[in-house]
Image (cartoon, rainbow, N blue to C red; front, top):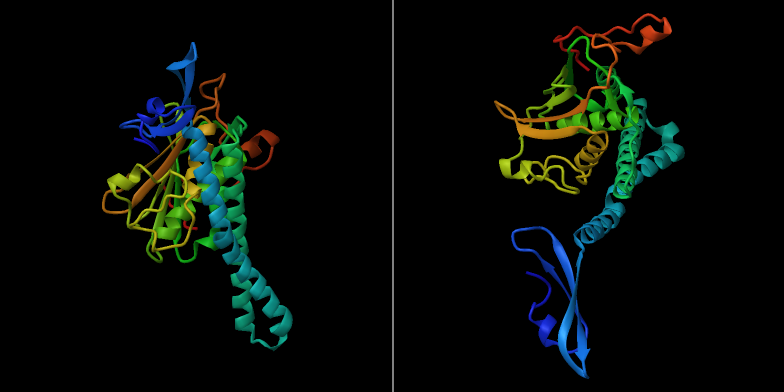
Length: 314
């Protein structure tokens, strides 16, 4: 299958190039044929095959990226600019409740714009072959930190966090882990019913530490589950529930894989979806050694933490 007939490579005089997709595959091959003259007669042809799958994928990403800029970046920017302009012009004449609402809208849209830019920057870096640092990191602390930091953005949704005690440090990058956790939790909140509970757990696996985010949203079909980590993918069952450009999960997958981990999604019993990721344990000289609280290494008092298995509402 392709953009032309394979027979043209042999029937057309002179050089000719065609692009074809391999049967039962997503690989795209560019084939160029050049005549090989023997005593003035073109009796043979030299074929040059080039795998252009990655090049075409990058072109699609670039085109999709450019088409999204005009809408997804402009929408929050318009809200921020419009609200700020209104406050500057007539803010003193507005009642306090209206002024507070406008300020809240500005903050919310500015945060949305900031997160979108973060994802777009990472998207650009991962497509350019970025490398992610490998340092010991404590998932249980990073997850709790993100939940506390983003509390205001969850609206009426409640985040219940449970952590297993004595978790080993993992190999990863703090900034990248924070972005993955934010993307997965915000995705769950976005598609969950109003005032519903999103459960987040951090627990030990086999030579790894796992983070699981469970919601009671509409979920995804088994067919869609195989595509949710593709760039710009929006599930039909959820695309009308909230706005978005479909890069948060793709960025999360690329970051987790760059840290040597794995990421997954699966339907949840009783309805909803589970998103999760796991990072490999950091090699420890002492099997009993842990880094449950980095403050202990500095001689400080440990920060308050929730009991394992005890939900911590955000």
